[in-house]
Image 1: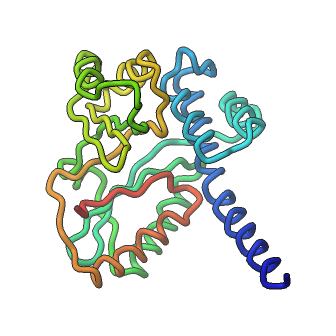
Image 2 (image 1 turned 30 degrees about the vertical axis):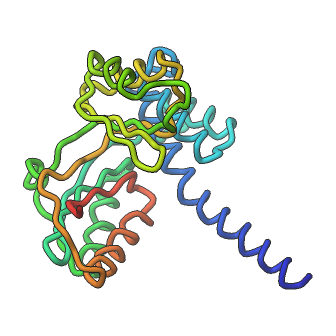
Image 3 (image 1 turned 90 degrees about the vertical axis):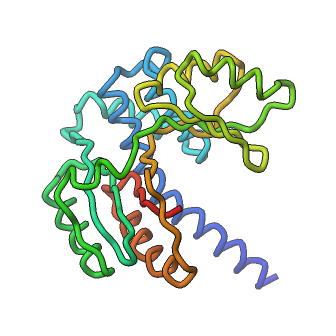
Length: 236
């Protein structure tokens, strides 16, 4: 009985730890989407997707509503979307997307993380050509639909590539097609698991397992920063 209680306690602590890191990041994404395109998810594809991603992480509706309300800036907090670039060990390139109310703090914190873990920050724009910004939508392959037909339907909405892996479909398009692709998926009656704008490396590199473990330490440290929304690398 004691061991079972300890397992439940540790399991609950792990969930709380995940929520304490994930929920604030999702909330910032919702706030910025609402500020950028309005608080009505029906007319704001980016907000609709951010709310969808929140539901996928079991974020309470009250948290979502508060994040949307925060877009008005009534609480005095204004988030800025900004990206930073860096180089890590073994030729790994980094693109770090942040949502911050204090860019000086964000830069200082990221510099410390890079410097302590074998990396360095580089001038913004230096690595831009090494990544392509893409709209990426994930959904479970529907049992009642032919994926070839789904692919044809999505081409007019900006589909560039559709892949399937372990029963999950991944839709890729240019970042400018994010709204049209998310709407096209919805119009097909398909519920997305996740929708986002991602940085895809143009020339991915392979690492050994030992090298990967070293780089993952840097990735983990970056993702632990409250201001960091996403970390992209050129690892294959």
